[in-house]
Length: 92
Image (cartoon, rainbow, N blue to C red):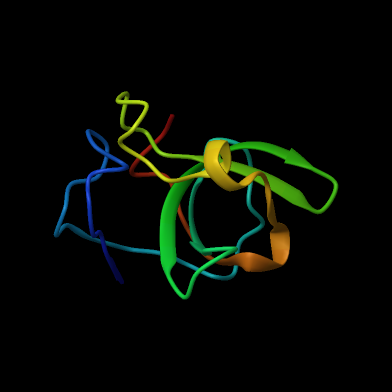
């Protein structure tokens, strides 16, 4: 179980919402990933937009360009930074 903090995944996920996440699946484009922030001690919940080799481009669903800190700010993240995947309930 993961609790959403913030509005970067709005309207798909809302601040305070609790969702199921699993760590035993292979990530695919369109999944929502729980990821370690590459620059801070923080956890992010973002949509996987692109997988290239061992790098993943992640992006918030919020249409406001300032509504999400994601790969637009810090570039792709390592696939090893994925903690869990939120799938099926929240398709792209």
